[in-house]
Length: 399
Image 1 (cartoon, rainbow, N blue to C red):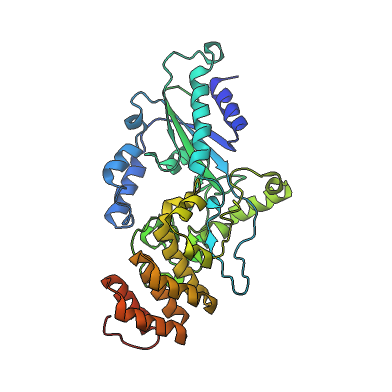
Image 2 (cartoon, rainbow, N blue to C red):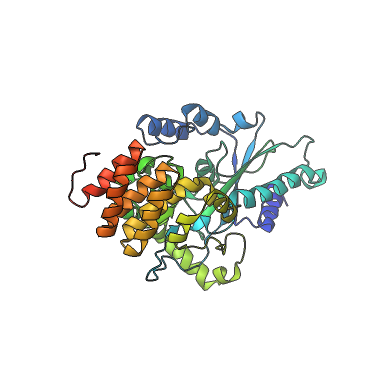
């Protein structure tokens, strides 16, 4: 057996569902594409994603000077659970499937560290390794163009919704990489593609896909609910539905994913899996929204410890909850939103609570907005109140 085969088998034993290898050559076409997206403003809102970062991310040898290979890995994360629960008097929100369980960064990083230890400890007679094996490990947030690596390694192909699609698992996979100075046998890229299918492009409620394979980051619900630090643009809020962290719509409509899910159901994969990506009791796949408005900072930290949701931070999550409550149209949320408008310390949350009250309407919501207009000191929240009152057909002097 070759060293490359040994490594793949070990990775599979650790729980990786797909393992492929590519060279450590740069990705100049990907770097040019990233530069173009930045120039077009499609990466706005991600100030850390610069051209300088792209230059490093697209060259494995900038990360490890004597790199010779990159190991591309994937883990299937989808679990079967009820979503969009609608109980009268208890509106629920949507959380992207990948965030139902434990933080995948922590889970996968531990596996990568085991992989790195294996690469450094494997006996010379098994592969003739020279001493001094080096590795660099990446899980999503590191400086590595993970989808470009996966594509060139033959792990999957680049979908029109900008995800990596794989045979057997669809796009429901987390990607990870190990850059190493080991000379491994590279795999060939797949010849698969999306053909003429464009379901994902047309399913996006905010129109985030400006063309096949091109995502306008500033309109993506995942960006709006997770990365965007300030106010959500007014024209996009009604299009977000009840999403409070991430979005799966473009994946849910994908035929490749639908086929993969059916195959896995028949194989009993969902029933057999009870791992770290299963919905956590304190989070769930579709949490009740009104109780989330009552979380203070410490309660937020406790509830979402070791969860991807902690990335949004309390203020952004509660902002998203307000938008979802406004969109769901259930008047049961009015008292909780009024309390938020009156007592919440974060102006960002108060402003979105005002918008939600305007969206829901009714005399109680209007009276609360009028009262807040006379007492609110923050100019941004005052504008939100004026906008909300405008939904009642009134032009506010504070607008």
